Amino acid sequence: MKKRIQCVAGICIILLFSFKGFAQLKFQQQMIAAESAESVGVFDVNGDHVLDIVSGSYWYEGPSFLNRHFISQVTRVGEYFDDFSTIPLDVNGDGKMDFVTGAWFGKTLQWRENPGNEDEWKLHDIATTGNIECTRAWDVDGDGFDEIVPNTPGSPLIYYTLKRDKNNKATGEFAATQVAEKHGHGLGFGDINGDGRGDFIVSNGWLEAPDDRAHKPWKLHNDFDLTEDGSVPIIVADVNGDGLNDLIVGHGHSYGLDWYEQKREGKNIKFIKHAIDPFHSQYHTMEWADIDNDGKMELITGKRYRAHNSNDPGTNDPMELCYFKWNGESFTKNVISCGPFGKGKGTGIFFSIADLHNTGRKDIIVAGKDGLYIFFNEGK
Image (cartoon, rainbow, N blue to C red; front, side, top):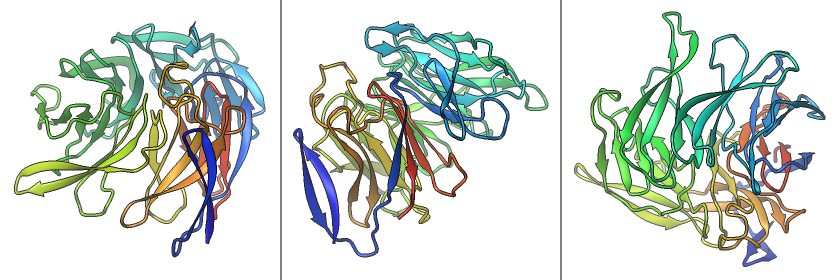
């Protein structure tokens, strides 16, 4: 018999459940900073072969993460820092890791240049894009290098390819490829039809990748209508092991977390919606990773604190960080942190998973308007 905390409608209750062969992971929580940036990345900033944490205007030196170093001042608009992703990428090919971010209010895709010393990091514009909800990195063209893909609700869907020379060294310049004239809130990427090419998932369907991604049109299939406030990312994964990729979608600004089961009738594709957790709101971001080292992937997610300040349903419900494990029939929820502001912890808009101390276990690093934290994975 196991004990699990479930938070519903502002009340945390204890549930007892049993599951054969199941043991919940333990996590050790460490507060890094009382900052309110909502994005955090993990990479080796100073070249000492130790992972560091990068969030907002600062980076935190590993392995203790106690020494804070200034990056540059991030523009602040009201409660928000205009910094909606932290994607590690050596943009200019100098051997030092930079990062890509996106601005909702500034409507610009940007990268910050790692100077390799204590100087301020220079901010470079990549493109004017429209409002950026969040930015993700996926290998869209299948060449082994990730493209940068901002979710820009109400604007065109465009991916950006970092140009490389004949030796595959990054040049600092990007090429833009438009996929659709317009898309909404929420974005995913993965192979839906099994042709070996990754497709884009948008709120009103999936965009099928052509054989020549850069020059041929992407075909929209209206096989589903997800939500007007879909998560970034939308996860594309074979949830039930039937050989067909399914979708996992959170409501970023309202209640609900669901998975959409792919079904085939000949060449026809359809999706059946299943609830994962209808009781919590602001499932804005998530990751799909094996955090218990059993060879199977888990869904790591939680509540984005004050996504629209105080204007989203459930905004005053308890904070929560959790992972969901597929049990063969449905998802089992495992709470990592739950409680009111100051006790529980949410996910922000872009979080990271990394083995910070080379333990062989993946840790969870989360930023947000409720602070910057590490949850060290201590295993079962």
